[in-house]
Length: 150
Image (tube, rainbow, N blue to C red; front, side, top):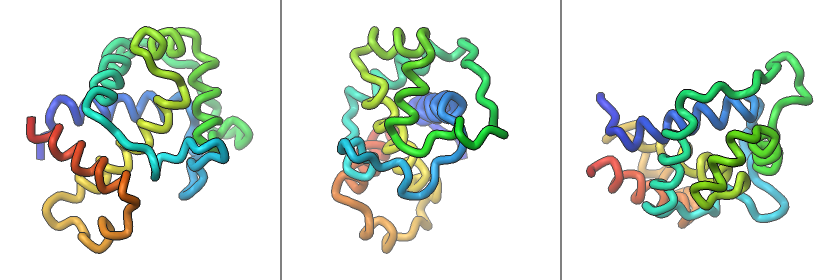
């Protein structure tokens, strides 16, 4: 199955985010005390457009190396991811040029990744799983599905 350009771009964005943030995002660990919870974050087409613009701008930029052997370097919350993004001046600048904060970008990327994972299961996706999603997660699946149909 071939992914449309916008889904590929969001996949690239996710890859960049995960490269910057580390690999230790545990289930539920991405929620934040400050309300930056991807499960309750609503994606919009305009926000996804801005995220794609950031991804395109950073496509050929090398991110700082993350030491996967150092457990303390792993991001365990959205705020940890945002701090790691802010520590990269070129990433911080690209986000600012597109009117995004690192916290908004990290939260939105995780929300888009969650919706994209559900959509990647294809027509056989478990509708019971969708019923267990938050209203925002269900809306995000619809937003991403509409984007894929473009």
